[in-house]
Length: 74
Image: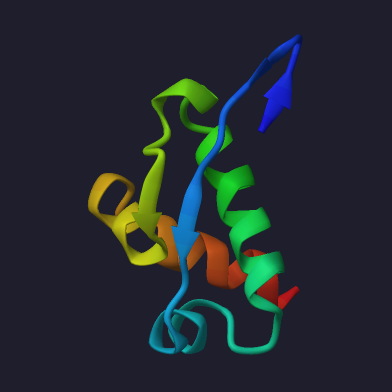
């Protein structure tokens, strides 16, 4: 992720079960992209974990599943 000259790198894993649960009708890449949009609406890029499984987002933001499912089903 880059903005204003700074950049961060993140490694995100998406299991088949996570994809099926959160957004079965989109590609894993699109799911990750939208998930980062969700995260960036709530915290700066430097605060996002450098490595995580997609379902870990819910641990910090309980509204993640409902929000991401709604966004990607539209």
